Length: 56
Image 1 (cartoon, rainbow, N blue to C red):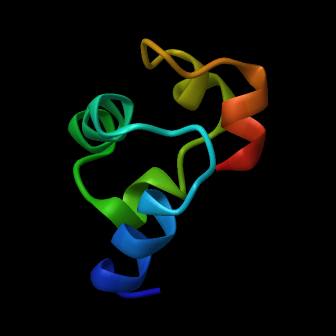
Image 2: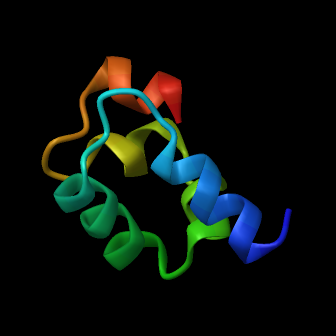
């Protein structure tokens, strides 16, 4: 998955707003890296609980 595809996928996740998306990007370093994070890493981001982590 290239970065533009990953960014689009991130933007289309239901219930994921721009602030939380930015926090995920800050944590992972890039849009594609967000999708490689484990459940624990995802849930460690403020605003991402179990349900959001599963959507990602």
